[in-house]
Length: 351
Image (cartoon, rainbow, N blue to C red; front, top):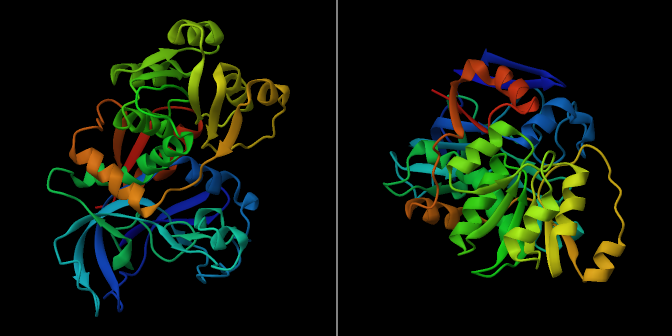
């Protein structure tokens, strides 16, 4: 079968690999349908040396070694079932919760934060298998079944939309509140849908890319260009001078955090959900004078996967204009295009 394999820094190849065969006890075999490319894949591709383990050695928890099948945002159909699996049947369609294992011993794990474990391993990154292949085997417990009105294309978006959902949950905003989103890439778009699902309709989106502004404007968002327009003035007009209750920083740029902090009402909160390649400077007086705060958000909880699927079934999510499909052979070109800021969400057809 064909698969996209990561061999090392800036080296991904689509090659023939053995079919995974029959699933083991507690596992299922999936015919993969779609797999998304995300910011962490780009980070993995361009900066593997920044990861907390040496990718050229076996992962300390999973034993996974290079070349690694990629693809952690994926959906598929069950085609075989291992011994002991009773809650899943052949023909079920599902999104895959990719967290494979965490160490279970560090402070993060003891506090119930497995995505903050430095040894956390994910299917499609640091554990065997992945969505960028025709078939894969995963634990049956990783499957989140899709209702009839949520197709496999939408199912592959459950993982990235859950990242945005978790970030919005971390804001603590109530229905009727106001929000700013910095960055209209896939996670920013996911945050916009998550705010809508929580009853937060008054959301301003800051995005320097004209293409991405057009994409999220077409979905119904109110958008500002932070480079050529006055963001502070836009926030003041949007909120009657009060500032926003919360902000989600999904841009991966230090100035976006600084601008988000300056946009907050007293007591507000900025949630950082993006990977930053460079450090930043800011004046902490901004926090002190307004009793505002910055918090991080990484990953998601299993129940947030289910909440996103339920919201999809209820028609909250719309993929019009921001989701592109390409064949498996186009994965490297897709990574390069996303690195250059072209497009929004790319789904790779695995079959």
